[in-house]
Length: 57
Image 1 (tube, one colour):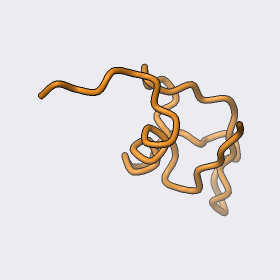
Image 2 (cartoon, rainbow, N blue to C red):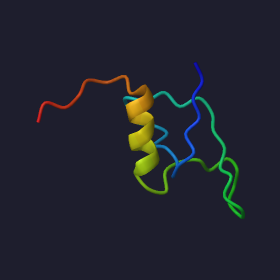
Image 3 (cartoon, one colour):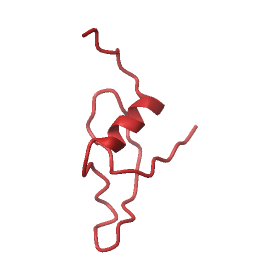
């Protein structure tokens, strides 16, 4: 299943996520720069597709 997250970008090297492509649609910015500009996009992607172990604390 493919899922698109329209948000603030994603942490491309997060250990619990596998990022397979993306695009930045912000006018004036590089389309290849879809890394995080804030933490919210990574948080949302983790809820959708996180593959790690939840924290115990």
